[in-house]
Length: 152
Image (cartoon, rainbow, N blue to C red; front, side, top):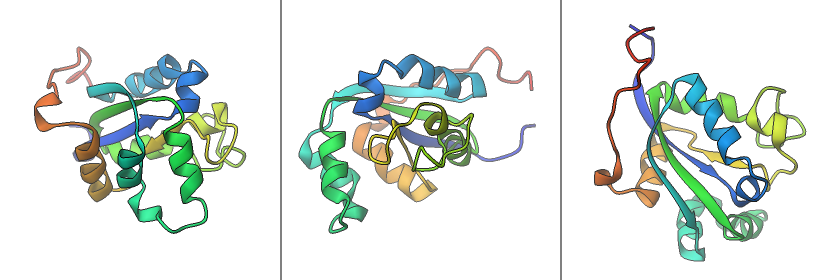
């Protein structure tokens, strides 16, 4: 039996990732790792949703640039599921600053700037639950078995 608790987490491919044509590249990394996409939505994040998403940063100097960036074009919201999914996704995502993110991480390989850093990933079970609730309703999660599940 694989280690880790089965978890669900939110990933947003931010507008810079969409505009640069990196959706397939980013998604394939998560799928190749063995994570399941159980819900997905391409959307324009409006100011109200952006404010709710970044509520913990309100009042900080960088807050306006976060909201401006996330509302600047389409984003892909993903609900990913797997063993220790939150930690695994965060590790794969890399440090917030792409200039210091490790090679082999999404931000380390493709990121250009701190705000335009391609991707958002929930940082805890509590954040994942709150953030997933902003983008998906319970009935939108589609359970299925990957063909490689159980072979590990």
